[in-house]
Image 1: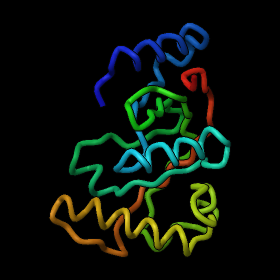
Image 2: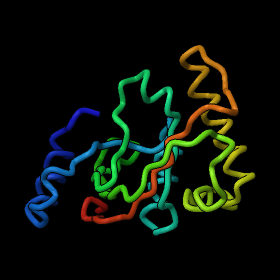
Image 3: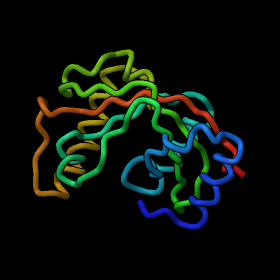
Image 4: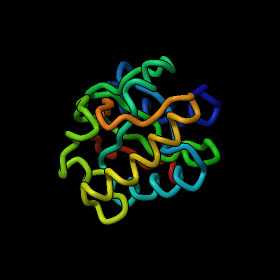
Length: 157
């Protein structure tokens, strides 16, 4: 994601209060692959419900998207690209889809928070992502499981 003037202003404002964070910027991004999902999942973070997110490892590598890193700070965007919050990554694990734990599924905060629900909805999501690249879903595919904590909501105005 390109750093827009709004994203840069938000990050500069955060750094003014937290200069120690200067070397920890990771990225700025929105959840999901459509505006509805971006705003719904962002809202779960802002409510303190969502503390985890997952991405397809192979697609991230193919698209040259750097992996999140522990201690990294990411700016969360809404569906219009406006910065709304900053999260700090606290844990990153790469595991096969079938080995995602119930605890991680719960941390994602979606639907009924069960592993069965997580697997169903993420298979649908990953299938959609993969089809756009001409690939098919593989239940053994690797998933990047990122756990995070909300550290700033001053962009949430």
